[in-house]
Length: 223
Image (cartoon, rainbow, N blue to C red; front, side):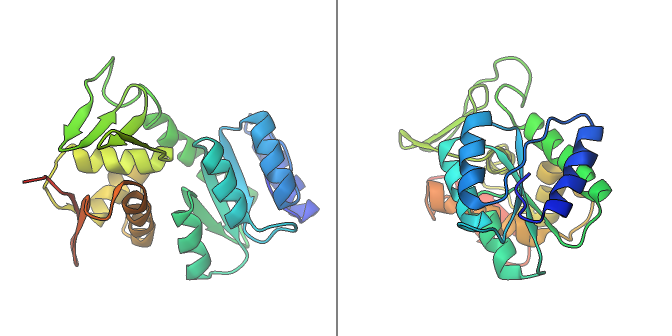
């Protein structure tokens, strides 16, 4: 839990501990990065506004070390902050004010999604890699390569790519991707999908995923 307001930090930490989680606290950007490297958490709850450097930079640095689930907190309903946060590797976001119960529910839901798309969790024992042109998705080792070059994806980015790769060439609606990858039953998070698509294009090439305006996205099949 990375939060510089001690009242909020302790309240959330108490709720998460009551839910059975081991919780560590950090109050600034540098401390958050150091703690994440030392403890290798399953999930980071990360405030955007922090002393030292902000949560966006924290997210960049911890995701550069290893894929980890990130739930980002923002004090403003600022679309730019939210989209940038998702683009640098956050998996979900929550706008202040929020209740500790709501945050705990988000944490549980995010960890369920991460477990679903973790190494060896997709399609039973030792499924064969998915090959689409020069793209290779190893579902057992949770590795992605394009033209032989490895790509560093977060668990949710991996799940999104996997969903598209299961039906290469087919256009999948944002609402379907939200339901299948995030488990969201409505269309309230379409900008979350858009931000993660941008992240995949940045990491794997702008030509890999086609946008069908007003509908959704398709994984391109090389001619």
